[in-house]
Length: 469
Image (cartoon, rainbow, N blue to C red; front, side, top):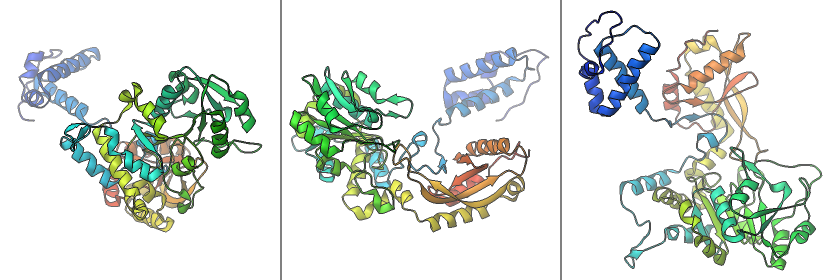
């Protein structure tokens, strides 16, 4: 900023008008508008007065107001380096999209698209048409529709099919997902009555049969993807429940939560029932997420029997839950990758991270460790360490994947507080770095780090202030 700071008498504040005439305030007005600048100036002067601070010149007030407006204009949602070891971290946005999906989303943002326009007839079309055939091809379903997330998908299914009637579900499947969001509450909002059967650890076929009555609308089976009950347990399989549902003339709805289109055993993980397997086992409808194991943007799929999908699409709630053109484009591009199984690992980041060889991760950790500044090495013991990654977002909660990372350990007696300050300093970098503190160390899991050069350059900006003790 240019201009000369004119000293003022002690305790004499410049007027708002005087401040607005300064060069710095003029620049602020040009960039942020007069109203925003006036508000910032007034707030700043008020803060000085309330805190009994010594007033400064009009120019300096203008500069401070400009700095405040600039800071407020920075994006609140920032890109971060996810080094937590959780591949699909719910709090960090879950799946990173494939480049094809990103390109498709950008095109949809830049131009008008045929979201609900039929080029053949020149009349209004259906947005589900862009995905229906592709989803049915990949899952074997008769029909499909998509909404904004899986919770919405289940809410819509229950409201469309079981409104005012009972939905039968095992007590051991009454899940709670992130944010204390519980299945019974979803069912209540869907205006269906929860009919619990069995116990927490054991549910039998006879329990579903006994619960069936003229008020029963459907059987609901929920995949307990974010926890596992072990020991003296019994649950009714999808196939068994499908037989019971068919005999009762009722639909079977299966909520898979994460949902996967491929067998995870190819990555050395436990088998996770796929959407196709669930449909083949007899489910009439299956709901699953788009932004977890599918590796796409946030969405909720409903696939299965055509007559039920048609009924769901007639529900007025469907319009409130539909996805926009940007996510539609990204989803279509993501699903296209699945048509060639050989492309999945190379092009969908979720599976690229899952399949990354341990030696590759360790070598990357060694390169990054070697680039850490001597000043930081004087404060912490830094070494490459073995660690464990996980899928996250409620997917295979007991599965751990061997990984490697960088461990920062404090040599001081108050090491815990020093590690907390280091973690805070890393979160304050130009591109925040998020790791995890465990076993008296701050660990940065390298599994999901691909931009090594960018990370090393970013890491050089660590503020060492306050880390000495």
